[in-house]
Image (cartoon, rainbow, N blue to C red; front, side, top):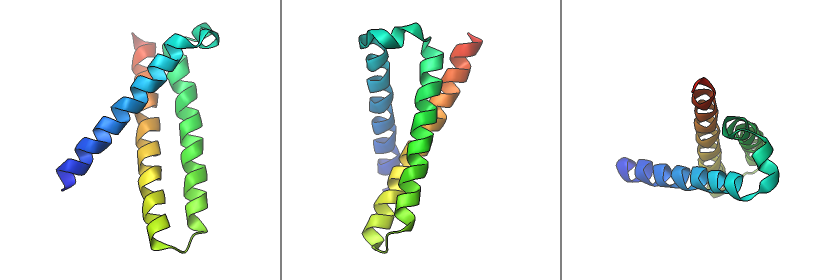
Length: 93
């Protein structure tokens, strides 16, 4: 069960990273930034979004809402962390 969840999270993260990369290639105004800068800016936005989702989850009293908010925060924090690492690695290259 845990392995299945980890596999699904990995698939969702890869889809999100692929979406961000395709967005960078398709939107001409994003081309002014390097890919590492774009990943860093995206990571900052995603980490702020995860903080907002976590703050919204604190006001809820429903168990289901808290569980779903926890999952969303974990996903967004993981995605933001991966983007920061990718940005750092691309800067070194």
